[in-house]
Image (cartoon, helix red, strand yellow):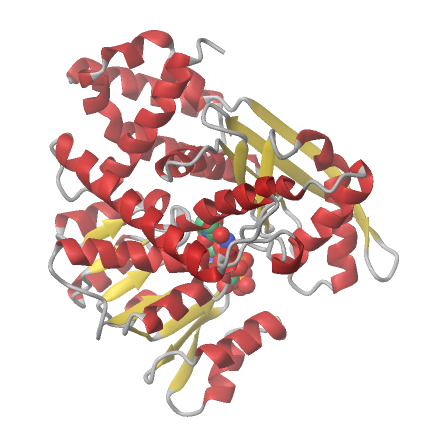
Length: 449
Ligand code: NDP
């Protein structure tokens, strides 16, 4: 075990040296390597084939210029990225993020996580991620369209239904996927539905895809509670974010009898003592593309907006970080634990800092890492690809049933793997190891490439 651990530490140091100024990528790598020592001790063949060195180096990294013109005729230049990380299990698969914080390190962290998450779904998809430092906030539809068209004018040559299949992420929802798909179709002169997922339901999209990540994260929490003989029914919840993942986390919580009290955006959070009025929140976020502060203005006396605050200070039984990376730190974890939180399920990618994860685990809080808990979105994306390949559209009930089955299976495999490696209840180790084993076995079988 010590030899394996020494080797993993050396590898981590080498990754940090060769990929300077990429803190999010270092964090994601460290979190995986920290859990793999028992696997390398048990399976020496993994150490002998340079497997980890290959896994840690993306197969391909693409960076490109994205020029576009705003409504006043001014030219802007953003940077576009696509990191095709690993295709041992299938075409690269992972979303596009449009946010000013996007750089190569952020895209690599997301792409690296995606490899293991996609493996955990049990479906045939590799790992990739992309995006741009473009900020869609405050842009008109026409500006977003021109940006998406320019972005796809370069990206199209790198993607395809058998090669690389992007989807949405922060700042990329149904509107952006529509513009991206339109430009791909125009350039290639092909109706290639399976090149993007998250499409509109009338033109190749899958039912339940918009809901899938949030629904899945709640189903994962329900599974973790079930192991402890508890359920979500009657519990209060704190949810961060107010985008795609947060909205459908709130919806599924309400369907299962829980009471979500909060939502947030980068300006602050809303707490509603009566529980979030989802219809009002959706009107503000999805129709008007407004801010959550507006919710408190319209909702009346049960709700208030806390500028700059963090939802984690609101006492609740379960927590769903669903906005962005590193949004829940050690102090937040201490507050949640003091307030008696039972479970935390990561709807976002890497929202909980490593220190906070350790605090939750030490306090016996059920902690579901994003790789497992938010895999419902990419799983339904893979089901969208399956429907596109068969030129069929499944009904809502069927997709929802498939999603529930996949989330149960991800929970079971993470839980069982953690027990097998002597860390019962540690879903971080269970998810990392189970995802890693599936990718590693495929890479070993396919030779040194
Ligand atoms: P959206 O763009 O729909 O919503 C993002 C939400 O998070 C907004 O409320 C946004 O507020 C807030 N947010 C974003 N960045 C920050 C920041 N730096 N500080 C504070 N708040 C922030 O994105 P999604 O809901 O799709 O994604 C949320 C998370 O879930 C991300 O981590 C994403 O990677 C992850 N995820 C998404 C999947 C999907 O299917 N969409 C699948 C799996 C994971 P504001 O508007 O003020 O920026």
